[in-house]
Image (cartoon, rainbow, N blue to C red; front, side):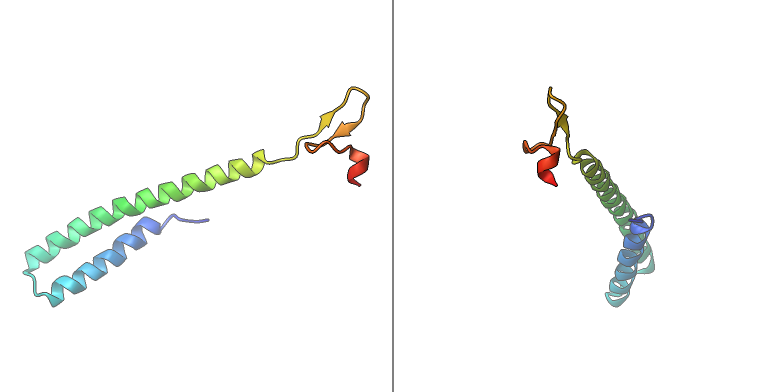
Length: 92
């Protein structure tokens, strides 16, 4: 899944909400810009951490899916058995 723009989208949405709220509350322009800068920084870092966590979970899930392959063992007499003890002919 493509999560390349997740931090940017999260940051911009939070910035838009901050701009609207500070405008409605009639903050001075300097305080509006300071609040906007702080929100941009915080939400960009938060978005980056969330993206990193989701990517890590995807890598772990992909690795677990590869590791779940069925194990086939061979007996000494040449018959193959699966994990549950059935021979290859019994499965068919």
